[in-house]
Length: 76
Image (cartoon, rainbow, N blue to C red; front, side):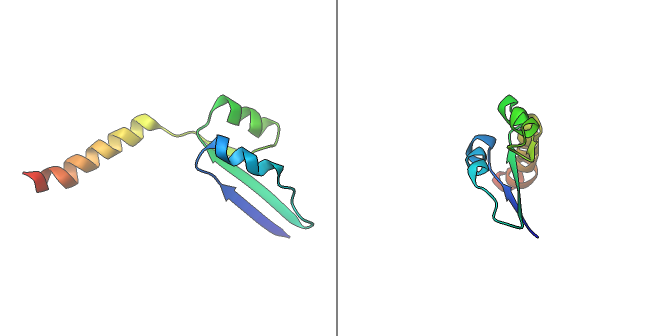
């Protein structure tokens, strides 16, 4: 049995792959990012195997921390 895992950059882009029908012996798991309401619906109806909710506030905080730790000392 072949398992194919497809992980997309955003749910809206990855849903188009849901139309691909697996060949005999294949299982396709499609996972998207964003955690939108549409993605939640797609998980419930089986179009997506999963969706990952991003945390933009934490991503911004991490970016600012890295900027302070790495770039600021080089500027000063």
